[in-house]
Amino acid sequence: MKDFTYYIFSSKQPEVAEGYPFINQQGEVIGFLKHTKNKDEVTATDAALTNTFELNGLSMNNTTLRQTQIRIAMPKDIENARLTLMMAGQKNDSAKYVAYIEDFIKLFPHAVDGYAAKAQNEVNARHYEEAVACMEEAIAKADNKDEAHSSYATLIFNKTIYQPDSLFQNWTLEKALEEATAANKLNPQPVYQHQQARILYNLGKYEQAYHLFQELTRSEIRNGEIFYEAAQCKMQMKAPREEVMELLDSAVNAQLPLTTISAPYVLARGRMNDANKEYRKALIDYNLYDSLMNGRADAEFYYLRFKCESNLRSYQQALNDIAHAILINRGEPLYYAEMASLQLKVKYFEDAIKTSDMCIAIAPNYTDPYIIKGVALAESGKKEEAIEIFNRAKELGDERADSLIEKYK
Image: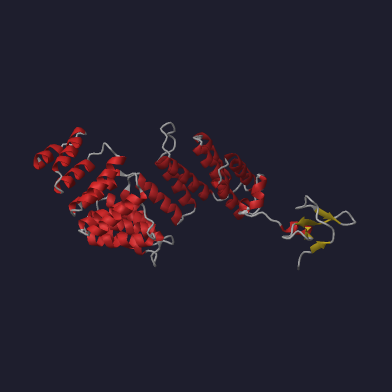
């Protein structure tokens, strides 16, 4: 009611109405018809409202615009254009995405983003030579050539690690390191040094990588990830356990208070304690990790904590965790077998038999549940049934069956 006029007309509403223009005596469009809830009034939104419409990086998510199926124009502001390009890459429409990339490059020929997106698209299609040409064009035309070299290094690194292709040998980790080094020489930045360190680690040059990671722990990008990567280098170098644990402690405490960001480092420290048979320390970290993840960890974690609790003889907690792992991944026979084995150990024979049967149902050729069920039956006094089960395990090639048959016969 301040910047625009709101129209209420005395005429009846047309039958087909929404969006119809209203014209004044001079033939000018003054407004567009809008339905009211009770449809008793004819109203219109001021046509001048359309002068305020602007594209931004989120226009692609506009419900009305999406219904048209028309590709949204690329915003003229580079930050909004970058957001549009990123969002277009997340949509399941490759043809439109290619068009967005071309629009971006035309509008911003000296920015790296368009070339990097185009090159990644070519890599996904296994058009590697085209990707090379694209990144060479980026290096030639970009205002920030260090960004172009770094983007090229990222492209090569990701392809080499995650999309290996023996038919294209031109991209190697050495080539990725060369590009990352070029970026850092043009404009020394911790982010480029981090890139170099990660490549060196994957080249197996752990000592060089470690020294770079150590330098980065004193830089502006100091965070848990840097300490964790340094710890991984130390592990590969067979460093003393205390040195690795010190780095993992730093990774956990780099960003306080603890959040889900710190969760992977808490888990890594727990695993390290577990591997060194420091089960109580490991369990403290596992419980902390579970809290940081709000109880939404994966089945592998609950299986890991189950093993740790079993080693501490906290059998009820262990049974709860292995049950949780089964709930998350009902198709993994190992979890059923482990649960049945612990039930047998604590003399829950009926439970062990039932769990073994569930395991056999999903993995009939897996012999562990037959052995566990047989022992549970035998210890319950059902030796004849037990021997039948042991014979089934023997038919499947389990060498333990003969000695168990002899024992309970």
